[in-house]
Length: 99
View (cartoon, rainbow, N blue to C red):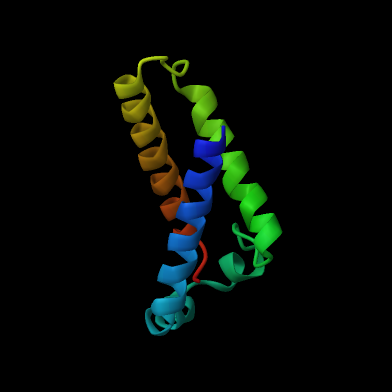
């Protein structure tokens, strides 16, 4: 459980770091977005709410996967698959909202 929490925290920091470093491209992308997507953001600005959204998406993805294996190698592959799907889903959410 702690490993999943640390992975989500790391992913959150990576997403925030990328958004902070790419403000000019984010502003350019925000100018091209329609007004509808700006009025209803999918990822909240508040850090606590953002963490809860990421945690919710993480648990939704984990519910669709098979049970966690007990073997360490299979568990590592399972976690890598989970993180890849989480990154993909967050990328879809970021597509609708500029950083």
